[in-house]
Length: 230
Image: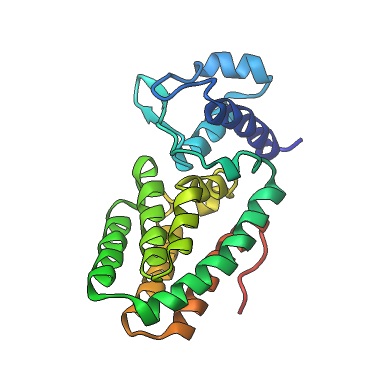
């Protein structure tokens, strides 16, 4: 198995323990030596795995102290069975349908107060998008505010029920090239959010639907390794 494949296996094992509560928020991950021995892999593999957990917002690493588990966003009952890579892809397919229409409705129905709320959420995401411990909540807040601006409580209730885990679950499976700490990737994701906001701001429902679809479809492409559409 390649180094990348080995790191993926370590990530999956540790992620499962974190999401199940076996390793609780605030707990320190096992020492590097312990992980090397437990999984029978090299230090390089362990370090890559921990780096990916950090990029997903699951742990925070402090120089000289080790890596500690962060508070995991509340997990919705409907996401308890989202475990495999296929499950995450299907979750994104579902979100594409729901959130694209919510964005289209938001472009028609949003109030000035709701538009300001979306703008503030976008500003927060721009400011802290590279911080794994905070960017999941900021990303979710943007999507939630768009749903709220749809004027249909069922969209708001549905996104609220999914919670920040709808953001975190795909992130835990992204290739390292698409980690939020990568400046190029972060810039692209911010731009995708900006396009959704801009279409809603100018009351263009077709453009809002398209921008939301492009953003979520691109997330799916990042997970499958497919090329972006031209």
